[in-house]
Amino acid sequence: MAAPLPLFPLLTAALAAATATVLALSALRHWWAERAGRPYELPVNRTGTAVRATAAALAAVAAAAVLYPYAGWGARPAHNTAAHTPVRAPLRAPLRAPAPAPAPRPAPTPEPPARPRTIAHPADGTLQQLADGTHIWLPAQYGYASAADLDFPLVIAYAPKAQVNDLLTAFAAHADRGLADPFVVVLPSPDRCGTPTPAKLLDGYRIAPARTARALLGLGDEAAPCAVTEALTHPGRYEAVAAASATYNRPPPPHDRARTQLLLATPAADEARAASALRLRDALRAAGPGEVRILDGIDPPRRLLALIAGYFTEKLDGPAHPNHP
Image 1: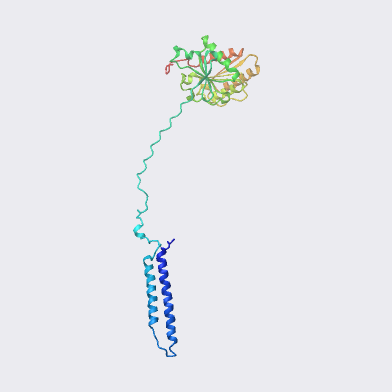
Image 2: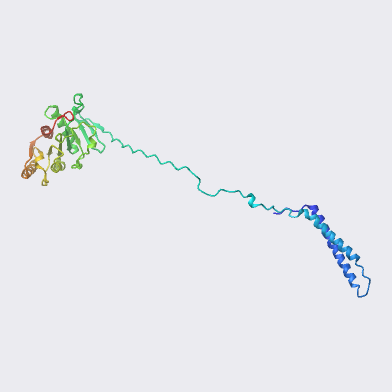
């Protein structure tokens, strides 16, 4: 917005302009009056007109002279765009040092397997639970100082929970009498019968690695037939197999009879299961050579289980120093 002119120059210029206007009008009227007298041949006197016109011109010049110093008052000075425009560098990506290559990440360290948890001490041994829920029983002899450098034979036992205490007590008692070797007993869930226990779960235990120091046991109508089927289907896993208190309704699968050492045990007063065991023995013998032993009429159940421990002692390698039978 333009700023107003100062008051005094503005009044002076206005007065001079008004004076010039009055004198110009007066000169014009005088000129008309002189002209109007020509038809009557009156004398013409142009001096008054010239004086008035001259005075009007001088007044106009004076008004212009007063306003001249203020020409452009309040107007914003024009900027020299070229002079005041900052010089900018051309737009381009800033120079940056190349990003360093990411350091290689170290390979994740595998988590160590969860340590077994001791949950009880049945039959003077130690019962532990492994990471997958499998239980493992260490006989009392496992903790003896004299056996600290020995590997123990292993029995994988599929047994109902109600029979686990009888099983461990019978094995421990027969070993204490010197009638059986002490065994490490692994107790998977019975519904996992047929699925071998992962070897890594047994790392850290002193267990003999050879097949000749491993046996399989199945107790009851579900686990015993499954143990027989597993032993016949995979004869290279176990040296001996025992099955007790079961009915065998299915024919045996194709198998390598020459490597099968099998005990079929039946408690007393159970004629139906005893007859089923005899039929299975006859079917196995008809398929080829191989040992199938029958043990029946034994009572009470702990005595039957103790005799199974004696059978495994007969068939398996006993506790020994590693790599030395």
